[in-house]
Length: 267
Length: 304
Image (tube, rainbow over all chains, first blue to last red; front, side, top):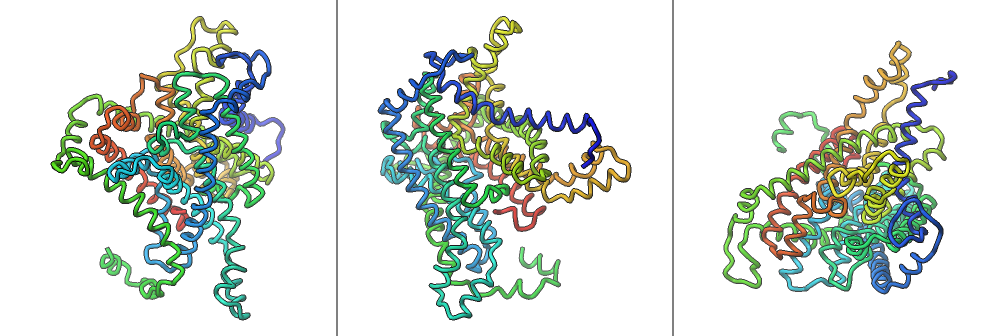
C-alpha cells in the first residue's frame, strides 16, 4: 500500500473500523463495570468497586445449582460430540459414501435451522413419549447443536491431511488398527479437541433448546439468568455474566494454543 | 436428474460413475446418523404431524386430522403481524450486520501482520463465545432509561428525558446486530481473503481511485460472501428468542416468542407445531439458498 503522508481515505477506513471494534467489544467491557459497581440497581456512571455481586452470585443457591448443572451437561456434551462428530468426520471424508456432501450439509443443519425449533420438536416428542424433561434429553439436544462444531473443525483438519503418511505406514507393515491409532488419530486430534472446546461453550451458553427441555427447579444457568432478568437487573447478573465471559475467554486462549483460531474463519 | 445430467454432459469423467465401493470407515457415521434420525428428523416430523392433528394422539384416541391450526394462523392479524415483525427485524438486522461487518471483514482479510490478524479474530470470536443472555443483558444496561447512553446524555445536558432506546424494535435490532455481526464478519473474511489483491491494484494503476477500484472490483467479487453472510444472519435473526423478548418488552412480538408462549402458557402443541412449521419453512428456504450460494461460488467449501 502507499505510504504518502496523511491520507483521508485511510484515516476514515481505520476510524470506521475502530468504531466497529468498539461496538463489538464495549458491551462486554460495560458488563465488567457493572459487575463491580456497588449500587443496588444498574446505574451509570459507576460509583466504586465492590465484589459483593460476585459474593451474591456464588452465595445464591439457584445460581450455584444451575451453574453446576450447566458445567456437568457441558462436559458430557463435550465428550459425546467429540466422539460422535470426530467419527462422523472420518466417515464423511474416508467412507466413500454416496452423497457425502449432502450428508455433511445435513449434519451441519442444526447450526442454521432455528434452535428454538429443535427445542420445540424435541419437547413435543418427549411429551408424546411421556418421558417428561429428563437431563439426558437436555444433553441430547445440546449434542445435536454441538456435533456440527466438532464436525467442522475435524473436516478442516482432514482437508489438509496427507494420506500418503498413512500409506507409508501401511507399506512399512503397520496394521490398519495401528495406522489408525498411531497416525490418523494423532493427526486429527487437534481438530477434534478444538471442536470439543467449542462444543463445551455452545452447551454452556445454550439457551433456546434448554428453554424447552429444562424442568422447573432443574434449569441451566442461562435459563436461570434469563428468568432473573425478567424481573431484576442487578449486579449479580453482571457478576454471573463475567464468570461466563471469563470462562469463554480462557477457552478462546486455549483454542488459539491448541489449533489456532484460523480454522474458524470459514463458517 | 441423473439422466438430464448425463445427456447434458456426456463427457463426464468415467470415474464419477464408477464409484469405488463404500469403505468400512463409513460405519463411523453410524452414531451421528442414529442421533440425528431419532432426535432431529423424527422430532421435526412429529412437529409437522402435530400441527395437522386436533390434539395429542397419545392421550386422546379420538384425534382427527385438521388444518385448523394453520387456518387460525391465517385468520388472525396478530399472527400475521408477528410473522411480518419477525421477517422485518431479520431483514433490518441483516442489513446493518452487513454494513458493520463488511469494513471489519475487509480489514481482517487484508491484514498482513499475523499478530494483528489473530487479535482481530479474537475480538470477533470473543463476543460469539459470550452467551446470548449475557450479551442481551449488556445491551439492557446500555439502552435502558437509566442505562449508559441515557444517563450520559442527560449528564451532558443534551436530553431532558430518557430516549426510548429499549422496549421497542430499535433496541431489539441493535442487540441482534451485535450478536450476529461476528457471523457476517467470518463469512465475509473468507470470501474477501480469496480475492486477489492485485486485481484491485491493477484497477488503481489504470487510474481508478481507491474507492472506485473497491466499488468496481473487490465489491462485486465479494458478492457471494455478502449473499452467504446475509442469509446466515437472517436465518439466525428470525429464530432469536431471548433478545426480542428482553429488549422488545411488550412492544415486540415475533414468531419464536409466539411459539414459546403457545407451549408454556397455552400448552397448545398443535398450534405451536404449526407456527414451528411456518418458521421452519422460511428458514429452510434461506438455508438452501445459503448452501447453494456457497457451493456454487466456492467449490467444495460451502458445506463445511
